[in-house]
Amino acid sequence: MNRVQVSLQERSYDVLIGSNILPELNCLVQDVLSASQFFFVLDTNVEATHGEIAMDSFACKTDHYALEAVESNKIADTIDSIWSSMLNQGCDRGTVVISIGGGLTGDVGGFAAATYLRGVPLIQVPTTLLAMVDASVGGKTGINLPTKRPDGTTILGKNLAGSFWQPRLVVADVSALQTLDDRQLRCGLAECVKHAMLGHPEVISFIQENHDGIFNRDEEVLIELVTQSVAIKAEVVAKDEREAGSRALLNLGHTFAHAIEPMKELGLFHGEAVSIGLCAACSCSEALGMIDADFVDQIRVLLVSIGLPTRLPMPIQLEDAMGLMQKDKKVIDSCNRLVLPSKDGAMIVDDVDKNAILLAWASVGVTSS
Ligand code: GLY
Image 1 (tube, rainbow, N blue to C red):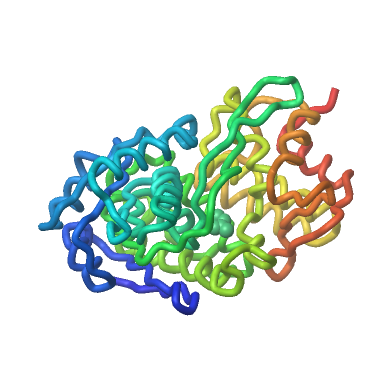
Image 2: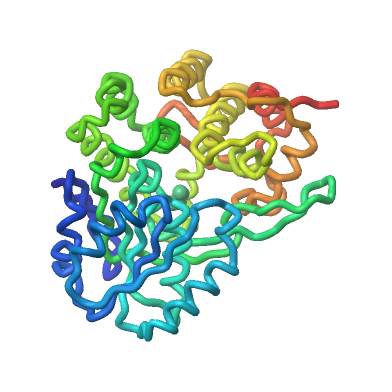
């Protein structure tokens, strides 16, 4: 089993990465904290499988709330239901919330833990690659809020309410990836590519060289992939826990992705939107002379080899994309702040030239009328 520490003084914690470790969850948790009551927030997809294995490892009282992990459930009403369920089960400030599932379940369970009785301890047990390498690490929790599109229709804006609430432990059992479908695996790989683009060409090579091992679910390869990616994220988070500055580097590709992900007509999963967002960010950087065309090609070829999209599945209007981009909370006021790839990693760039942004959108299939 590998161990990566997220170093945050008194809020430091370990990310444990291993194979077939879920049946020992109780012991792994007891090593870190003791509690008399545990409350599980579970993705309904894993309730009868990983959820049951994890809950069965506990001898003491456990209760749970299962949620269907879709964006339309990542809302305030769901948090309200979890709070009520915890109250009805007599959860107190010593109760530990254990969130088991993908990134959406972790964000929702984490936000409920952050706010119930002003905060109770949280353990993250990610069961998707995306949640293992990204969502479960770093303490971001949150829900979506309804927001208006330029045409007046309402959509859910991603993660517009939330809090920083670090888990006490993250347990990533790569055996859970055996049953994860390929589309979800590819989505997790988009975040691994993003981490690699923060100045870690060795991780790009690892992904290129281990394509078959990853898709054949070779658990040694998966442990190494998750460990490398989590180590990159842990280092960034340790330097800037609350995203006052450099943590924003983790948003590489995401300002573009957050504009297209809520568009139901595109039918994109988060990792797919991130993949297109990474391509747009590369084009933007190239237009600004920050990277050369060879680097852009290398990233596109890698994403294509993984089976991720590098262009929109259908054209969308520039006005729509730009409107939602400005609503992304990472675009500070309207100073066009973007995270862009550079020769040595990535950079936060203010006042990005609007023409470069327009070129970036055009490069992934956005049209202007
Ligand atoms: N997923 C970006 C972050 O955790 O900051």
